[in-house]
Image (cartoon, rainbow, N blue to C red; front, side, top):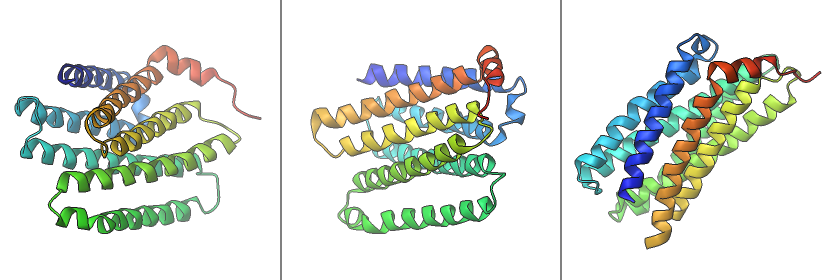
Length: 228
């Protein structure tokens, strides 16, 4: 499994670099928040992988702390991205700014509730398990927000197919994270299956973003007819 984690990290990193390179051709101006998110994902994933490999490909106290801090940071940035895309997708809808503001407050309340609800696990001396609970809950809420984004995009008279694919990538990542973290509560093989699913999900999401912003694919999306 160590070889797979190493290869998945390398592959995901290369795909993110490819997506950043493709967006630098000018697409980033249309999707600045997404561009910033992909750059941040690349920036955070590198030290996260280095912390793991520096520990001899075993989870030490330092590598675990680095993993959870960076992983939760990436999840929170993903939530900010979904909210920003939701505001953009519904810019013609009255009250969209207020709705996004209420959703932001609701997410913060859910995050605080998760941290508080599982605090007994932290008090019992299981910080790794506590962070797994919190990360799973964040992934579930993120998936719910992404479903709302999808509903707004699909109901729009002028559908942005690029945003639909970007939303699909975010939804895929959130769902896979939720499943992977849930499996981590089980022993042995199922725990490893959860780690495998999360790593594989990062590859799929990175590949989707890489493909969406390739020049030929982007031109094809631009020519697709919008809903009447």
